[in-house]
Length: 357
Length: 252
Image 1 (cartoon, one colour):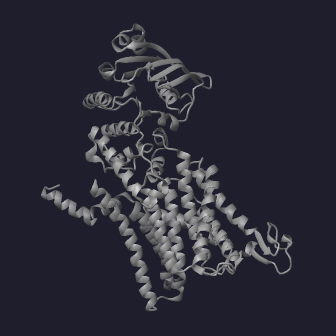
Image 2 (image 1 turned 90 degrees about the horizontal axis):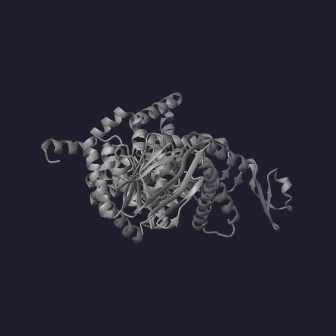
Image 3 (image 1 turned 60 degrees about the vertical axis):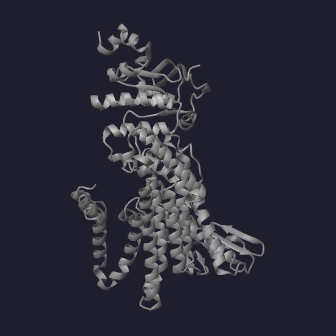
């Protein structure tokens, strides 16, 4: 029994160590100035994608529901936190504190949306759930695109039409300007903060999985009827998993928003393409495999940039890598081969051969 | 007073009266059998008792409290646990975790304590582990505690399902065809185990079964269902010799 727990802890430890080692290597490379400015610009988005992949894996792999609206929750987190930062820019001058508060605002509002959307959506199953979450993701993005919020001496003004119909006093400041989004968000996101957030995300998810709540959630995934028969509240745990996943996506959105001077909701950053891309990370990393999500997100984000030298051929290579990763993770024959050639299993085989099981 | 007291239970699906005027009284510690030809409504009775279906009429009392029409979760908390005709395990969880899920409502700590591994998490989790291993030991499954439930052989999967049901520390255990698909040896072993569980946990058991050897071997009382109605009820040997029962099973 002790051995089992040790193995788990060890596994989790490897994941944390891996992230920290990569972080240190990048820091050394940055210090020695051997990272191109293009790559430097990719570091924070990299953390954003890793957080998104890990949090989506919680919904897809642990809760077992296919959600295609993950970018929508990221959008909620990004806009609510950017709005918060814009409002408090003059009040809270301490960048770190403001970012921390913005992070909480972003994550909580995304989690709240997770609950609100989860209540109707989680009644559905499989493909239907996927389609409806896809729709909700798009709805969030489109609503944000028509949202105008301004501030003057009389307080806040809202409109869903245009900035003029807010009837602001002259000199009022437009905070959220519809399709043009939020301009002038303080840029507080750094690679270090990003990695810390990645570690926190992984910590929350891994510990959650190995707790009473996590077991209940996985029980629902494996057999809903049986879970109900042993007295597990299905709705409660489904909503819990969905909103935690949404909240963490919101945190990724906060990181994303505070990395840009202009934040607007385009199909490229918060559309379904983004949701699908995150799902690709999850599927390729292995559904339910948290460490796999981290690795897949990093490799697949860096790959297009690393292959830039190949110009036209890079998407070709990218797709080949996708196929190879998929085979490596999912093809039964390859999995069998991989299991057999894992170092610890080699050892076990030798021991069995010697007869001391 | 009977532990399970069911009066005039009935449900219809559309025009079909699946169960009609079903009565049953089970005393504490009894091993009770529910038999009948295919489609007689046995599993429907189980689903009514555990809240999967809501009855159209009748009253179900478990240990004195009325559980008629309550949700599955409330009935589980009230003390009825069941297994399924087609095995329903948490396949991607380990054998131990399957039992731990069964212990869900008896050991508590909140989400935050779980995420941050606070002292209460460690203490409760340790207790859960010990209890789970204790239960697994009764079913001689402790050696496979770390194996995924899906990888267990069929007979052990059946056992694990009973172990999981017992983990909820029920007053009444409902077994839906526990011997289905088992060979004679496994069935014999299962019979011993059911009796052992009844004695050790002081459990009341209601089981559906087709295997007459098992039924006549361990059940003290029987109810025979046919076309959703009670055909005969009483002490096992008498019921099995009832001409009506023989007709229902073997035809005229």
